[in-house]
Length: 233
Length: 112
Image (cartoon, rainbow over all chains, first blue to last red; front, side, top):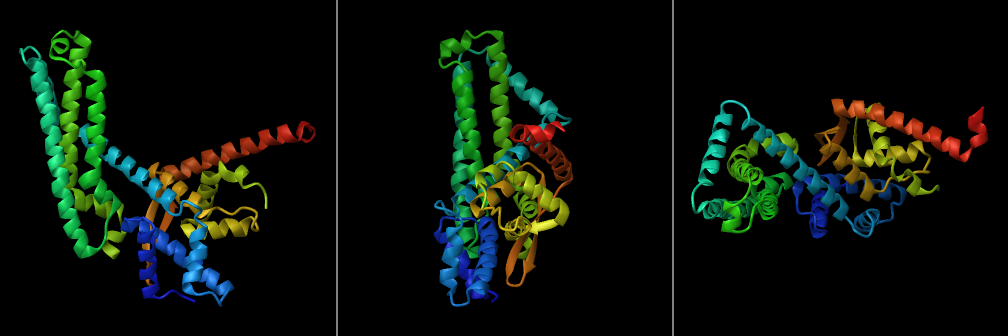
């Protein structure tokens, strides 16, 4: 017995019902279930499609599709950070390295100002706000698109919204643990910490720029690379 | 059926070896192939197979290909260049492991 198109659609719905939101993950699971259901029905023709489906689903264990979704998420997040690193490298090659040095120099100079600490904090906070606004705007855009296509892609979601969260968190911890936490301490820090803080803030700005501007701009290209099924579906 | 736990640490090596012999395979095919080769002794569970495949893909050892088969899409996995190299390493490690275990569980035999 070969499954019909309607039954395949049913399987997509079934995965959605079991908390698999993303089309790319759903597709792999649907094919797996379909193969298994076909072989179960062959061995036991009296079973209905639903019965065979439930038998097949049980093989995934008590957590159902959860492990599969989690492993896919961590794979894609890893891919995302590799991408960021790739773009970061450009900032240490000509011509962009000039800009990197420019930023480092500006932030080093700022430290000699009286309200250096406040300026640093405002810059970091400002970038956070921009990240937040971008996430909200992109989420709305994605929801609209999803209503039309009925599909969500995991990597797209990481590029447009989830990725910033990880970067924000990374920046938060770096600032929290590496930089002094008061204006006085900031003005009195030694050479090592003052150079470190210059690098931290510069990296944060570059990383944010890459995640907010560079990567989303190349989204279509990157998604087609990640998902060959982008064209097929 | 043997103790499935004993096989657990070897899942990645098994997948890599299968892909080395079969060029490209999809998830369900892998589970069936393992069952067939081991005459049902080893059953790779679905909940372990896909996370392992995703991990190998994340590490750049596997590449994917999508094909339309009948009325559905199928995802095939195949080895990348570094995947092929890693397969050789892992198989070597596995041989070492088997040898060491042999020494441990059957010292007399290994002395010869």
